[in-house]
Image (cartoon, rainbow, N blue to C red; front, side, top):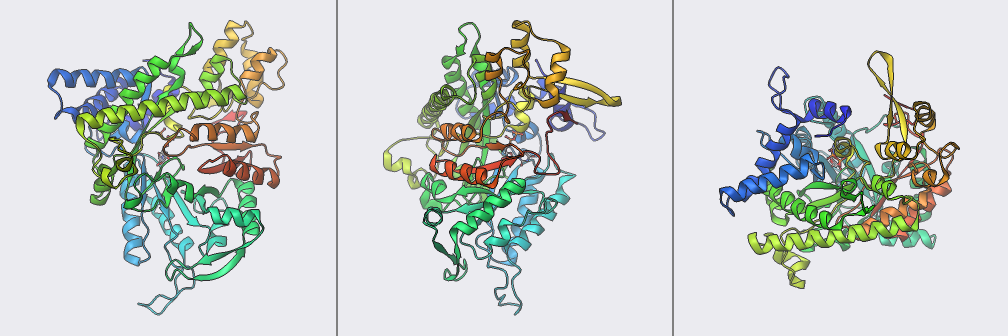
Length: 569
Ligand code: UDP
């Protein structure tokens, strides 16, 4: 297998089985074999032994060729005692002490296994409300978020990876202003991403500069009013300050809720790409688009992509079967709707290889073509599975029953961030532009290593302008923008997240969203000099472009930035 040193390091540290003394019990191929075998075993009831071996080989091939990877918990836990394979969960937060602490316990169990949790705190009574049983007053959603946060912090050390949470509050909750500013100080509530749950009514009120009502979730009665535009401005200002909160369009999540009879969608998973019902989990997987490049024809190999999508849907559907869910309620819901989320990674890399600038109309059009193709093929594959294995158990309560479409999975497509998966596959993450064309990484003994984007390295070697000095020069800023030694057409194609103007980020997100059942993980990057007006424009544009939510990040606006251009630890 062709894996980078970095990928091997990550896999050894977190993914490969070890004995109690920390000695590795498997190598990377062994890990993929373990996963392929376990996931194929879901077909035991449907096929004979030879068929099973064939399926296992298909899955093994697809992963070791890095054409498809399932989300991290599947790689970590399949075929091992924990057996929890999903990355995404949403848990309900009820307005009772028992309910709140029950959910904290359940979240801890999920984090331990590498899953992320999302919650809506909108049902909690506002700060200062009466507590009947004690005669005291309620401390409100934000104070409880801090308890969730502390619990996550404590589980961090022992778990397979850092627990992550999404916290959502409806914009008409009486504590909304406290919520919007609760991460103003970046050292607070660090294990949460937060998003304001926006409604269409609210957006209309912003447009017409009107007041809107705050509703007490317990009594369902209006308890106050705020000016929508002013609230929007505070959201914008906070997001400008350090990237939080994001916004999420609740009505849109529910417009696309395929099982409305089962309940309302009130939250997503931590990175925003997977809206779920309370107690629902979802396993994700991503096709590596860069590996779908037909180098000879210099085009995307749609036949190969179609086949990969079909196999990937089979794989992800099998995951639901062999998954060990941390709770009875989650088991029931997740097997009931059988949601899966197939997405992509390596999008920016294949654009570069094809010579198409990320920030161009051609790229946006290709995004639509590719994702429409993936969505259609994923649905077709799920319909085929339904013919063989049956529709999902809650099918009768779904929109599909009304349309007469017999399908096995209530949703099939989601664009995940692929933070670790893309590192393992050695490609650009999700649908994000390349972050830096080259950068300096500190390795042991204070030695510095220059990492060069592999697609660029290939182009530079072919174009005869590769040199170590040049790569070092590029690493100073990460971008090719001002490097005149590089041909202009190359500079136009190899753009980085910071070179791409915000509206192109949003256009790309919207292009993928149009053909994605669930949602799209995307960060709209802004330069350090961007103003609050720029942020407002991005939010408004994302709303008009039919995105389901939007997250921005202004360069340098957080003390701790995961990646720094120029120097990466
Ligand atoms: N996630 C998490 N903790 C992490 C990273 C991810 O809980 O440290 C969850 C979270 O729900 C996120 C999802 O996994 O939205 C997918 O993230 P990503 O695609 O980056 O994960 P990967 O499979 O690449 O590790």
